[in-house]
Length: 476
Image (cartoon, rainbow, N blue to C red; front, side, top):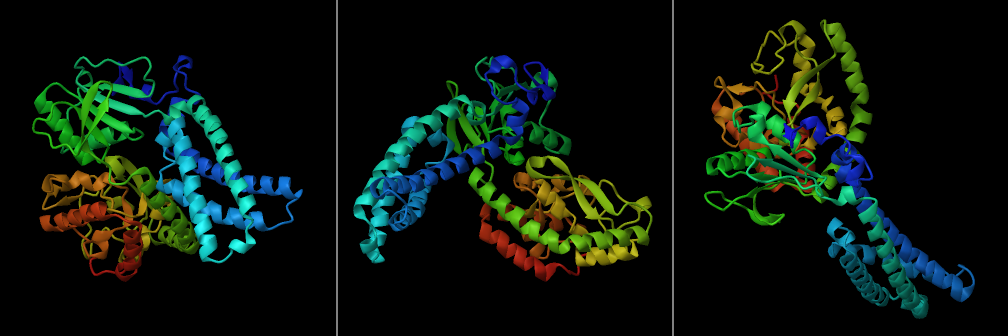
């Protein structure tokens, strides 16, 4: 694909010196969400430090030292209440941090709310006698002044140094219908699909993989097509892709879920990813924490069976297969090898059956106990997978002789979230060979239910339930 006649690689290349970007475009494109989370966490830490230092400064000026513990109690009440109030007011969202007026208003309002709550708690907990009301009041005043100064400096730094991280990365898929790139839109990629001969192919995993990679680091994907039929085809493709997509068009027969704008055009929001940035951060943090513990426990088990696999049959210890991941991007999935190398099915076109001659003696045990899946913990650490999510399928997976996406119209929608080491379908017993159409229909239905119902508690519940189905009669 191209961007104004450039190749896809050019879209990821560092921006030129005249673009005004402080960091390479490729780096920002890949890590912009990480940078945004870092900036938000940095703002939280700075605010808490400002309040803490305000209490210390007031006590030091009034008493000539920090021997009194009154400031500690005051700050201890202010810090958690301020943080809760600031989070409730969305003071750390990027739109709040980059707008000076919004940044000052939200921080000052949060501080006022924190002061009111802190004094109420002090009265309720009967610790008011131990607090110096004068020092606490001065602490709040000094903190209010310092927060304003910090917001002025912080907003200026964000606009100047981190402008490219704050600016939205927009990918525009167009048929060349009079929409031209603007020189001041350095983070906007214009892709003329007609010029490149790209046509929505809803039965082609290569198409979804390509689109998933183009929109991988985009904040918004905008469709700009004049032809009504072409708009509808691309709208359906975006709905199945799991990307955040909008359309420059009249409503027509499209069923939008929201309205937005781009330049002077109204856009129809036609699809949304299932999780916002905060939810993805929460899920990722949970994955990393639990996976780190699991690798400490199961790392020696993986190493032991890797050695046993080598002794059991000739070939590598691990089986690496291309599978479909989030937003239909393919990735390399790791498993302990359970089949003979000379009979292995690289594309997964034939489901494993009972007494399958391709499965080795040790492989049968690995599959029955699900130990062969343990190396996917490495995929979780890499960010390709999550602990819980729709199970990843090989590109050649079939039921009744047909590819999965040929049997289930909404099949691609199951990839709106990262694939999981375990999932809702698995704990409900939908695993093993997919011989009948209903086998894959039940799994996709469970996957879509999981995506629509996601919560951290649901992930924890599924992980706990997985222990019951590690050994299953359909695991062979």
